Amino acid sequence: MTVVVYYICAGIEYVELHIRGSALRMVVAQSKRQQFVDMEESPMTLTRFMIQEAVESLDSEHLQDMQNLMASIQMACKKISSLVSRAGISNLTGYEDSGSVNIQGEEQKKLDVLSNDVLKHALKWQGGKLGIIASEEEDEPVMVDEMASGNYIAVFDPLDGSSNIDAGIATGTIFGIFAESSSCLPSDVDGGDLDDATLSCLANTMQPGSSLVAAGYCMYSSSCMMVLTTGDGVNGFTLDPQIGEFVLTHPKITIPSRGKIYSFNEANEPAWDPVLREYISNLKTGNNQSGNAYSSRYIGSMVADVHRTLMYGGIFGYPADKKNPNGKLRLLYECAPMSFLVEQAGGMSTTGSERVLDVIPKAVHQRLPLILGSSDDVQELLDMYAAKK
Image 1 (tube, rainbow, N blue to C red):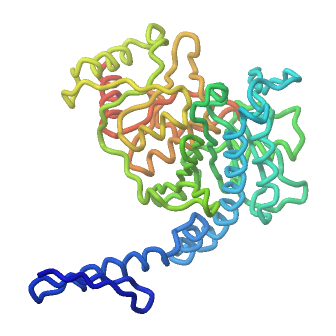
Image 2 (tube, rainbow, N blue to C red):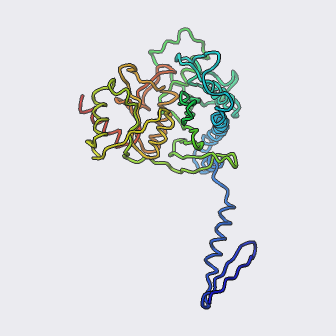
């Protein structure tokens, strides 16, 4: 005979099943108790994560600075996420009514301008740690304040993929943080018409990606997710709308050494160099080192394409072509931060001829060919280039 006994003790529900004299009470009670423990545990928020990293690090002062900067960046990203999600019902789609263009001559979307303003305003009030801001939407790097004594430089693309915003496709913010540098401008940069303050901004901003101390992106999609590195691996945080905080959901992200997806705009394939065309052809047919045919996935928003590559492995590229012999993506605002992030996750990044992080900028809006992703996939392409020399 089976007897079911239900009761509550110390706030925990118990169910006992007495079957021929034996009871299953402890199993059910333990399960209920664990549920209460899980509910009481606070999530690992981005703020808490940065504090913990600073406490455990030997270079706690640097990470405390990063904590202040990330507080400003995450606040800006939350605001941009809200703007993006409401763009269609807040008349924020389409181009600026004034027909404004950025320094590259590209007509600006309404959200390009708004996102840029949000980031600049947030970074202006970050506790004096930041001295210079450089944005894809600004003509030149600018000091946060004439009296600023901060020793960090922020570079960012406020809203990558904004050309897709009207179609509701994933977009994102890309950012990188440099430490102040005493290096001089490259010899082939003409600074004769610039004042001392502008020259100082340029000298501090135009650093190779290997000098980055932090980088990341925030993706605005089905969820809002921030992926970042401070030079010790890569971690992903998802915005929890219930508590309004970024919560650690993807600790210690590592990109697979080889994937099964390639992400290139194949409409440009006729204008690529012969080696790259052969490489992509081999991926399609399985005539590569893995022996597997790859699938093509291309969204057209760099943040979204790189995020998928980071999660699943494979290779992403916006290479040089006959129309854009120097590439199309910006070195400081897109290529360097993303390359730093991917390398921290165990991947590789190249222009096709050199490591992206070794390229010293010659202009703040310099463009660069970019190919990044799983180490084995990128290395296979580099081996093909080396064999053709």
